[in-house]
Image 1 (cartoon, helix red, strand yellow):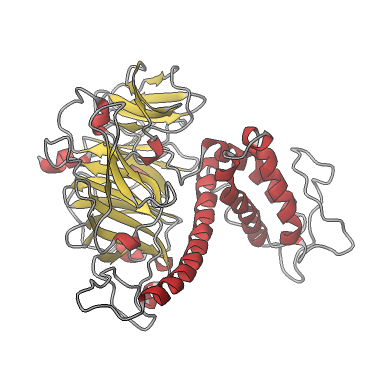
Image 2 (tube, one colour; image 1 turned 90 degrees about the vertical axis):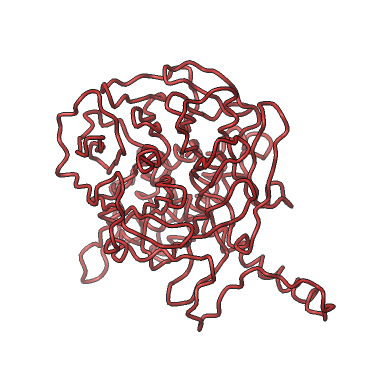
Length: 516
C-alpha cells in the first residue's frame, strides 16, 4: 500500500515470519487446543505490534535492533498466556531457537476428546499474517483511544453543559445512537454481511459478475492488457484480461501486495520477491528494478511511472527501472493512488501526489488533505470538514484519488479506509472500521461506509474508483471475495463480482473503461 503508516512495516513482516512458527510450536507445548494455542500466539505478536512504532523512536540498541526488544515482550507475556494450561510442576519457558531439544514434547489432549486442530495453520502468507496481527493491534489501540476519549468527553461535557446564550452555535456533529435506536446516522452506510452482499443486484462494470479460478486458462496470450489480478494462497495468481477471459500467471512469484500495484492501463504488475520487480502482462517478461532498494510496494502515478518510498521522501521510478525525481518530504505511506487521468504525466510529478494525513500527527493536528504546488515547496493543507469528521479516525491502508477535472489544484475525490470511534444501532453489530470518501478541494467528508462484526469479513478495503460517484470495495471471507460498488452520493451498495477464493487483488484504472 503503500506501506501506510498503519499497515505493517517490512521489518515487522520479517519479524512475524521468523517468530510466528516458533511461537506456535512453543504455545502448543502447553495448550492442548490448537485453536486456542494459535490464537494465543497471534495475540502475543499483537502485543508486540502495539509497541513496534515506538521502537524506531527510542535511542540506542532498541532502535537498531527492534527484534531484540520485541523478544523481551514475548518472553514477558508468554508465561501469562500459558500458565492456565501448564502443568504446575513443569517449568514454563519460551525458546525462540529454530531447533529445540524439547521440540517433540506435546501437551496431553483434552480428556475424552481428540486433539482440536486449528484451521489457521498455513492459510496465510507471512505478509498477510503480519497484516492480520497489525489489524488486531490497531483495534486494541482504537478501543483504548475510545476509552480515553470517553473520559475526555466527560470532562468536556462538564465544561460546556453550562447554559449558553441563545445565539451560541450548537455542536452539529452526529451523535452515536443509543443501543435501542434503529436509525443509522445520516451519511453513514453499513457494509452488509458477506452472504447478503453476494445477493445484491449486479452493477454493470468492466468486471464479470463471477471470477472462477477453475476457469482460468494456462495459455496466457501476448499483447493484451489486464483489468485485474487476483491472488489466492498457494495458487498461481489469475489475470482478468481485456478479452474478458481468465488466465493463470505461470510465475508463482507474481502476487499483488496491495490494491495499487497494477499500472492504470493494466500492462504492469509491481511485486517483490528478492528485489522489486515488474511483470509485463503483454509479454510475460519480468524486469528487476535493481536501483530500487526499498521493500515497500509502490503506487503508480501514470502508465509508466511508479512511486516508491525512499530516504527523505518518495522516489519516482520509470517502468524501465530508471530513477527520476525525488519528491522531498512526501511520505508514501500517506499518498493516495491517483486515478482518472487520461493523459500521461508531464511536468512536476508532485502534482499527482495527494496525501491524507491522520488526526494527531502532530499531536494537535486535525485530519487533513495535503498537496503541493511544486516539489520542494511548502505544502497546502485542507482540514477535513463536515458533520461526518468525528467518524474519521486514523487512516489505514491504501487510498485512491479520482481526478474530476483538469485543474491540478483540485485533486478530485479521495477514498481511504480508517479507524472510526463511531457506533451504529446494536442490531448492526460493533463497528470495526470505516471507509471515508472526501472531496479534496474542500476537505468535506461525503460519506462513511462502516464494517461491523456482522460483516464477517477478514479484510475490507477500497480497490479503486468505478466512476466519479462510485467506489469499488472488496470484502474477503474464508472461501470467497466480494467486490461491491458503493455510491458515495446515495450510499447504495451493488454487487460487482464474486471471486471464488479469498484473494488479494489489484485492478487497473477502471474509471477509464466506465467513461467510454
